[in-house]
Length: 330
Image (cartoon, rainbow, N blue to C red; front, top):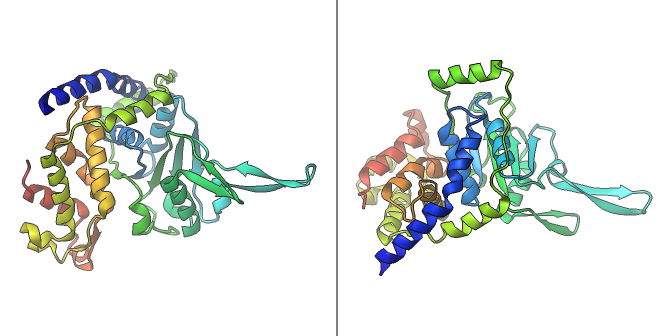
């Protein structure tokens, strides 16, 4: 019986996920290479999560989300975070209207489908928390009125690892609200050559809106139907529990390297991201490779390393690799 249901879901998904290929083709008109980043953007979009991108300036972070918003007929706003930014600059404020003799609401840039929070670690904590509340609750309070944000609502926050001067690092409780943290690296030689050629030519590629917001919301509902075997569920739980109590999984050498492991948000987002990854690969069921593919991005910012690990220059990547190599794949 289950086998038949899985086959039905599989057929349905492979038919309904056809727009993913069109979306990739459209985004690739302006973005060359960086497939991982585009995939992660789609995982965030379809999994109702938000993404934290880390990479040096000039790796097309802004261009990527701007292109995505054009391809999905959505509104796009960019907020440049600076040390003197105030929460009202992000969410909006009450403005006194002299003619009416009353206060009117002026909505901030957060009211859009796609938000690029550029250099989020440059703004003080109160601004970061205002943005993160909007991300978590999908609503904003201005004065005594509460406004719901439009769906889909995707925040792509970037932080530059280069400049540590004058930055306010995000606290663990706040980075935990991001579904994924993706590290972007430089393009390879071939891609960079193409990027250079494209920029020097006069032709500016035009991104056409090919997917409606309604289609994205339908796809989100469909993703819930993707089949996840109890063995895969146990695999996810084992991975997350190994970050908390590594000694129970014969990973005694990690015990002193980890201060704290992933929270239950880690397992929720790992399961969600794995389902979306299966959808992007046009499958109606989750396989262990889906979990492994998204594992680093989901857990990277959820594991707190001890001073000992930092002294030995051990990164969260290495810790996750050790866990993945140890936990038995179903």
